[in-house]
Image 1 (spheres, one colour):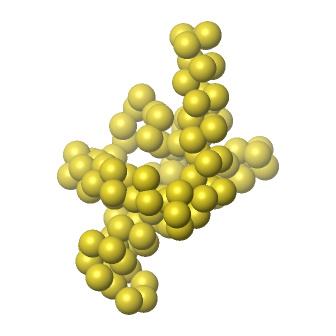
Image 2: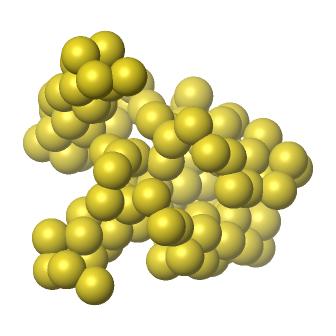
Length: 114
């Protein structure tokens, strides 16, 4: 596996884990670590990212047209993303801005080369 794809994969997993941690802390009022449900979601998301065959051609899972999550896990991750996405600007501004920039770049690329 190419180093840049591996780096991208690790960055995606770190971002998702940060979003899950933020969600868990604010929604489930955890002081340290993750509650069992959020820990299971984090492990599942990491596993899916490790096995993703499209990592070279996508920016983040949220932009992917192939939804490889089981329906119940997909709904859970959507809840996390809806809650944590806007809050990431305050908790991890550099990562959030990078995500927005890469998402916009990917959308533009897809518009130019569908």
